[in-house]
Picture 1 (cartoon, rainbow, N blue to C red):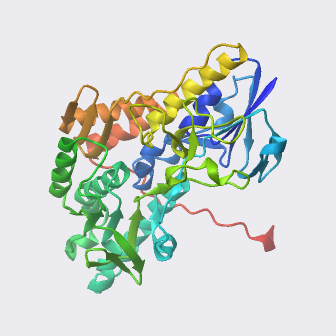
Picture 2 (picture 1 turned 60 degrees about the vertical axis):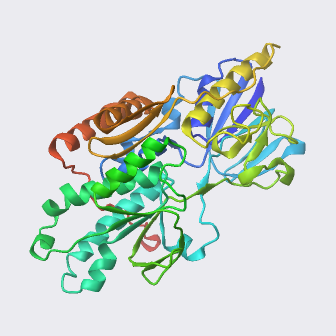
Length: 425
């Protein structure tokens, strides 16, 4: 049996492992976590609308019926291409075919203070840390009612990044301020203080990949929710409870949520000429990495310049990862049977973003654009059916239903497991 090793269990890696059906292959899926999670809903965990288990599921349980698929918990350290070997943090593995599906990591653009002090929004751990941190900030603010300066720093939130994550988390925080804040924290009703939410983006518009209508509607809806939007503006520093912006403005706050950019990981053993624009692994039309034999890349960490409809490479979105995984799985099956391989061609199925209760925008094929409740309903339906397992779907639907009809939810808990005491172990 030929050995396929897949590094990364996100949309691309997991679906490749599940869809490669030819029994001529022994497949090993490698991930640093023992679970897969659904990144588009991370912000709902971060704001307490969903539990981590609503958007995550163990790899081993998902793959238990795939007899030719194994799972290894570990992190890639380096590859030894000459020996067809990968070195993980937990073990070493040999391969016949190696697939990189490692996705992206947060990009701080070299700003050390931002990296040290901002709240990232990339992993499930990030989401939990953000939920704990923001809830703790509000609790501390209830004890600072006579200190207006500290109160302002605790309750002001800056969100950097005007893509779907930044827009959705800004809208969600604004909804929380409007519907939940007064119920849970009566202290602020006795001492009125206006909280501020800022959304900052370096582009001239929000949701850059979407249509102009979607961008305009999103800006209008966010402003109605009370979010202050700064466009053509970048965060340049964050220290001493001050966020510095490129337009010269200084925002006094302890809370900077970073959703402004991503970059790819580089691993030891991969030649520098394998990387293209944005440090993404450059591939041919079959997702094979140029200048690296029997190695492939799919998803956000790859860039393919052979698709005539996307000469500058595909967007780093989930649909590209899913379609590349399915195409490569079919090609592996064809390779085993000696059949002609098929080049990858991306079909854009549209994009969407939610802004708040009954507020969303959706761009669908054939230049169809929707906003408001209908777009919100499409967003809810698509995200529900995209979750990994029926248990995730049911739990998420239940939590969303309660939140929708009550304008409230009950997952606002600060939970931080204590580190084990080695002295008492």
